View 1 (cartoon, helix red, strand yellow):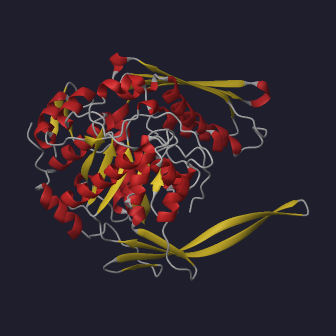
View 2 (cartoon, helix red, strand yellow; view 1 turned 135 degrees about the vertical axis):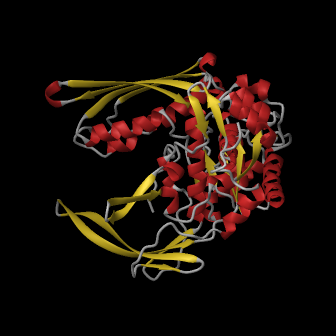
View 3 (cartoon, helix red, strand yellow; view 1 turned 180 degrees about the horizontal axis):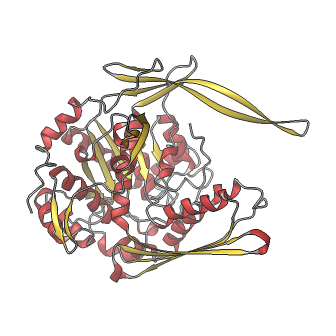
Length: 494
């Protein structure tokens, strides 16, 4: 099927040039609090916060006002994204989706003609109200509120323990329709993942048959090779920035020990000494931080051990993410927040899943499943702690998570949830949900949102009163919209 002429881009080079030349804003704020220059958008913001103090046994609320200034760099860079697990279902799907959208592809399915789109992406497919006009409320695309990266212009590269090129990897994933894969093949046949880090102790033994594209050497040597790969990609692709994102297999949890990975100094020393408990994902995170590249974690292992957090803070590099919230967990976040907010007390949450992709295969191993179970269970903790009427200190709902590997269903994950809650006067309420979700087609737009928002956060600085401008905290709390909150952290929102 020929590309849709109305949405077809020019050549990739033309598209890239457009990134640097485009500076047309979708709207302007006419206010003394917002100023526009060739390079920046500057805005004054009054931040109201309540400080609570106890005085003679009485809880007192003290309103405070903080005058802040935000500055956004208007120049949209050429962005490179390096995916760890590029040859997996998520990696091939997100790469294919950006190319299909860039080319304006359309293809036939048994339900009719489909055109490439970014449904499921907050930045690309949602709108935001900016005020009222003569005909009512005015909405604009979320992507137009500030100068943001166009996902069509992202340049992809990455690593994988499998040496399949992206055409073969896309066929193995069985996520996209065949007529679309056929059109995409000429555009991705040259894309081959770089060798990745494979340490069998951290992922399921059933992944061994895929591991034919692996680095060798000490952990220090492998980390330096990842750093070299990042520099090589930046040089050859001519991108201005690189963001690294882990979408590879879930690892088991790493032990956290004093003298091993508790500080930036000890983790660097442990890498040099080839310590067993330094995981592949942590090596990728450290390499990215040392290269000044934001690192986003899309799996539930504890990549961000204290030493990595300290290193990111010292280097001023953004990190974020603790497993994508794409299906069951996204629904759980919304529903439990609603129930507790309505004064209803969830006392039992049982979540069952089965899926047949490689993620499911890897999670069939007990240690890797444990990482996933922890991240899924932690998602309700903050909501429970916020209501001391429903829950006594230390009280939590019974929360059971089950994941089964069923190869036949492939990427089409089935999730069944039962929420039992206590209601008024000893009554109970039970909600049962069934959710069939195409895993990678939900995760891929989240990947795009995470890298787009991480990039623009690099271009936003702020200052309080007369202090100098500064960047956001190195741990990007904005990422919790799309992924679980780092389970071992409590992060201030600003």
